[in-house]
Amino acid sequence: MIRNFLVALGVILASAAALGLGFLVSQPQDRLLAARDRETGRPRLIVPQGGGDGDSEYSSQAERMAYEDSVSTRIALKDGETVLSVLNQDFDGDPAEEQIIAYRDYQEKDGPVRIIYADYDEALRLYRRVWEAPTAVTMPFTFSMGVQDLIGDRSVCLVVTGMENQGTQTLAVFRYSPGDGPEGRETGDVFRNIADIRIEGSVRIREAERPQSYHQGISRGPGFSIAAYGHDAESQNMLDQVEIVYSFNPETGRYEQSKLTKVPGSQIEQRRLRELLSGAPGVFENFIHDLWYFAGPQGTLDNGQYIYFDPPNREIIFFDDGAQQVFRWQNSSPTRYGLYVTSQNISVTTLRRTIDIELESLDSVRVKVFEDVRLKIRADNTWDGSYRRALSAREDLPDSRDRSLPYVDARYKSSIGSIRFAPDGSYEIVSAGDTRRGHYAFFRIEGREALELRSTESRSTEPRSAEPQPADSSAGGLYGNRQDARETYLVERSENSLTLSPILIGTAGIRELNEGTIMLTPEQ
Image (cartoon, rainbow, N blue to C red; front, side, top):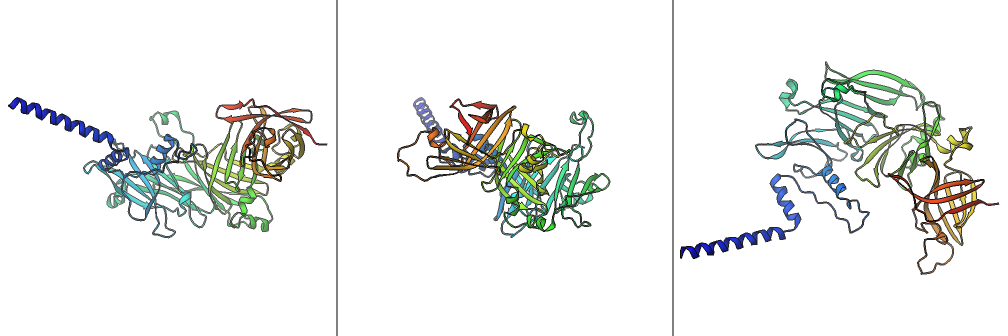
């Protein structure tokens, strides 16, 4: 009897276990994730799902994970607190990472961006809000933060940058030093503010070369200074600036002014200058809408590096010797000397750049490019420097006939129609009643000449058939009449004629498509 009872009990338990396992397997994945999040105390992030479109921002699992890490908080925020950015970093050397959360309280109109330090509590087994402070940043889309050893003693410094509503650039440095000094122990502060710089101009960190012994953990390294550029109040010229250098003072534990240098600017007619720098919407954007060449310290031009600012299409295109990088123009704010732009790479959406563009003269600008500081803060970015407008640069070059010029003034006949290249960087193709317009640029890559055409408008003056057209020469080029299409060709010159061969340019360099060539001959 007992034996039969035990057998029956075993069958019941086995059935219950199987049912339980089946129940777990049948649960949707989001319920299991929600249960996990309740256990760890971490809020769950709901990521919008694309509608099957391969071009969706979240189509890449890696990008989705990176996006989740950038906005997922490990503490619950209060009503009205909206997350802007999250930084996960080990500050105290324990097994659990700490978290810096930047948020905006939208119940406070024009209020500052605030930062929270969240640490893991071993006793409570959850993250809690330990410290928080306001920043000087009031324009949320300009906010950025990262960590770096600025002092050279391997202490962790939180660097916060951004802009105030008045167009003032700000940079604040918070040094991780819990209980450092009587004041810190009394208030429970985890970070000490060791730099708080605000200026109507630009501000950046200047890195210094550190010895190998520093990287090996043997010795200290030299500290980094901070350079700020603002208007020279003693000068009548609006472009005259002063450079203020701040260095870390070990005695006071703060960054203090150590040097001031006057930087003379170009002499420009002041009325025109006031128009460009008035801060009126679109004025400075229209001014920089062009192709700009990098100019070296001696005024020489680098044909292998240039930037195309395209405000109407909200794009910024970076060209160098081997690649083209296209960034989506997200936001821009006027500054005292020009424009501050935030952008995002169209291919790698987690790669962001902020670009500080300052007027240098009526045909040159000074550009400072900041990569996402969560990756690295750099002082000597390869894109930094002076850039001259392409047309002005071409006119000043005595040997321009031997160079590959970005713009020309010429008309050609071809199998895809009559082509007009204008000296302002625009082109027009007319073929059998179809007119196609856009922008073009000749450039060099891997030692070879190339041409890029970008269609922005396509019109037809004749009724079209309902039948789909093949993508051949009669359809207006290899890309047909699709608007906003890019076409890139290798260029072979023979006397006055040009032969165009379609290519693709990627991280591996040039890839020829072998889809036929287009012959351009001058129109008589």
